Length: 247
Ligand SMILES: [Fe+2]
Ligand SMILES: [Fe+2]
Image (cartoon, rainbow, N blue to C red; front, side, top):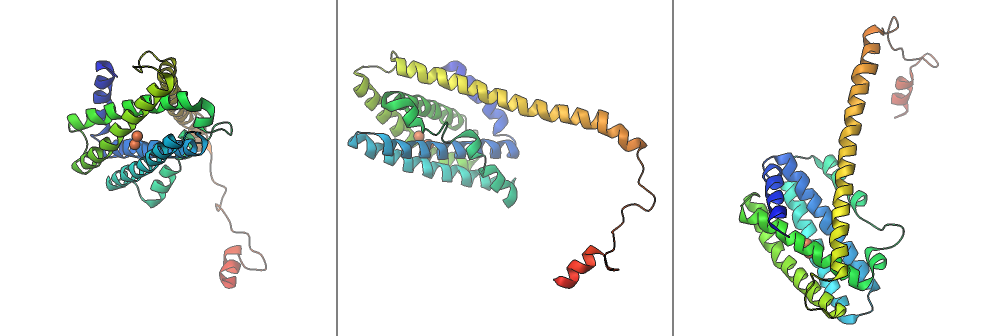
């Protein structure tokens, strides 16, 4: 949280919200993140030993699922993908979220680190959505959705902060080792995501170079056999004719 991060959000946002494809990509990523958060919260409902927190985790899970649907609707409203592409896009959830090594996020972190993770992630999300909203970057429909979502996110920040401080017996989250760890992990995950994206771009680039420099010249010297492709007749009929007669 700081002026540097807000400037970065503003710079990247000014590009992302300008072009329909980028708008769709961003909204779609938000939808998947919210969906992943909802699943993490449901796992926490099952994992926590505290009844009071279980209720809050469950409400949190329902909120995140609703946000996911709202972002998905806004992504689809951009009208840049057909039904097949949209389905493929939604399937990206498992690439970015899910159970790692057979254990849920709650199981891996435990109650205090999980609450620290939720507090840090929710505070970052509020900051990001707030920058978009203050600078009126999204389209009017998405602005309305963000206003709606921000109310829930403010509750997520306040209850996770309160419960974390109660559990750790502290008065401020800043000095907590669990919060420092959560922030460091987010930086590390951001770096890994960026590295994966760079890897995808570089892989595409090398393939393009290979096609142009290696496969391309072969096409110039290659010729089709005389007569081109032939359909091999069976029983005097082609396979296509036989298939048609069986239909
Ligand atoms: Fe959310
Ligand atoms: Fe949230």
